Image (cartoon, rainbow, N blue to C red; front, side, top):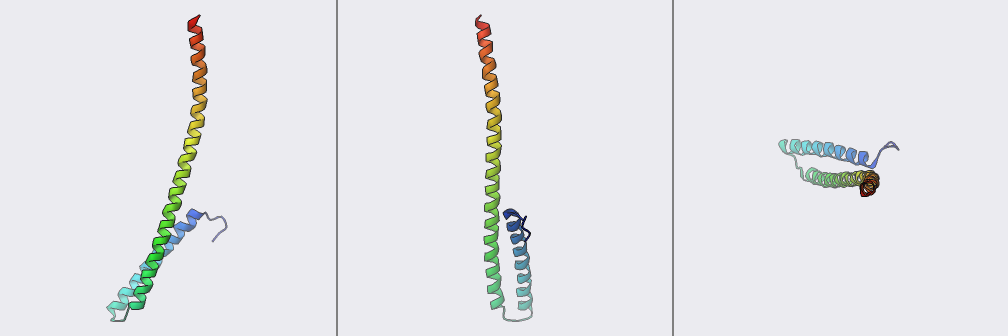
Length: 103
């Protein structure tokens, strides 16, 4: 894993590799059954691969959700800063206009 790989990229890679492994194991189970072999152990292994993949997928969703929350918070913070500047400016203009109209 490159040092620069982000947690999101790493998690996405784990999911992709997990899907590949599960698909391959499913093929092996199907071929074994078709050939009349005992597939008990291969099916147990497939079950473990599927459970591991589910963990990887949950982790990826959690990372993506956290990233979305952080981006939304950043946008909100940036938006609030921009509005504060505009509100301050409008407030100053309104005060100037009201003092000008009172004269």
